[in-house]
Image 1: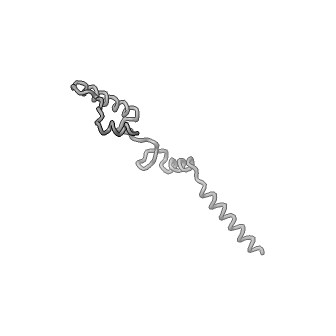
Image 2: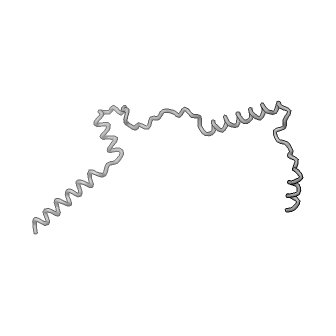
Image 3: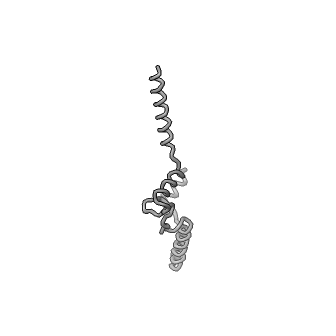
Length: 101
């Protein structure tokens, strides 16, 4: 019986060790990196949170650029003799169809 108890104690101790090893927190990971690199945090593969700025304009800048381009297009077309919107005259067939409903 004592051998059974010893085996169970060893299993329990091994289980505690395994659980203890799997609990890694971010600050522990960062501490490990600092200790391994002796305080030098610059690395090509490290994710230090520094990102290159995006070359594309933001949402509101894009919207403003679109508004300006549309306004320029409308202003440019007003020089022509044609109106932007014209009144459409119905054909006889369309008048007959609308009269039936």
